[in-house]
Length: 393
Image (cartoon, rainbow, N blue to C red; front, side, top):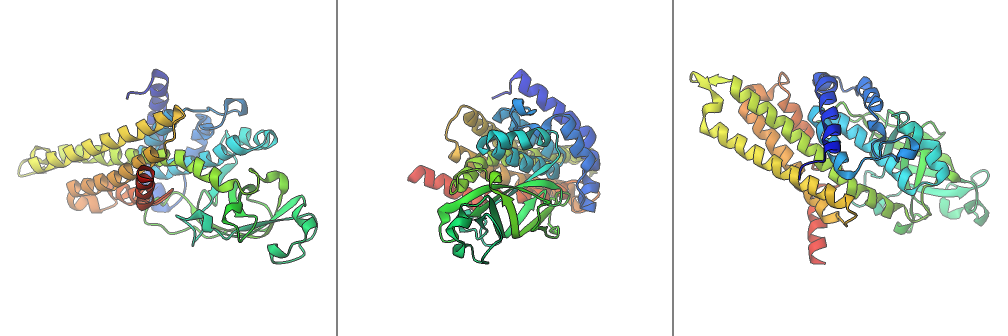
């Protein structure tokens, strides 16, 4: 399942960029908890900010295998950078797939350059694995809001030219950096099927960005809450027909899970590479620890699982590109790759011994970062449920 010549060429460009521009500053960015904006600008220069944007709007319009390859190589350098780009691409993909011609013309050419940065606001504190349980609401209004309760809005206001957003979103990547967010809200609080997508400029009145979360890993990537307090959004910023937003989100997230799987493969490969290098340099009992069978067996297991995760991920990407329904394959790839990343990073720390537990070596960061891949865009348990339900129902 080797990439084509074109796919390999793009992979090699990204691999070189990650080695020269991302990896050298990744440890410091993690320590300081600051996203490397110069790296983001570099991604824009390479046209990677428009990775999933159609060519007619200035993007690269990458196929799904290329998207997976790029995510793997970026994550090999820094998962924080790969995550920021993948969320930006979720936003551009929503606009490209579900937006009107006017919306695409308005947003995609600029977003393809990397500015504005995109965010994706679906999860809430009580509605993560169950997005249909969200409480963020959007009611239509043509003049002044007449009631604090959207259900009491007049018929005339529901037919108006603005939506009024109220509610809170949680775990928003790029939240402090974003210029626009794809926000999901119910147009009827009592109807879980009324979820709708909106394009929300982050500088709109009534949009408040919360504090940055102090996280275990992925510390260079900003994660915040968003609050909408009577935020007025033009009706023309609605992306889908009312009630079509949840299906759109789940469709986009299926492909996103393949991207997360690829990121997990990149982290696993980074941990494996670090372990192999250290095992060759570190000596005990007058010989490199690479000479010991226990270390060789660990490395063999790490390499085998990483390779298997890569094959699952590329197979899912290839199938998606062919137009197949890949809900099961995407969940298989994310489940196996994310758990593999955690296990491989854990073994890399073990091979490093006491040094692996210090910030002098990057394997502790790989371990902390790897854990989030088992959680975001659907936990391991959700992936197992998707796989089992798909097989048995």
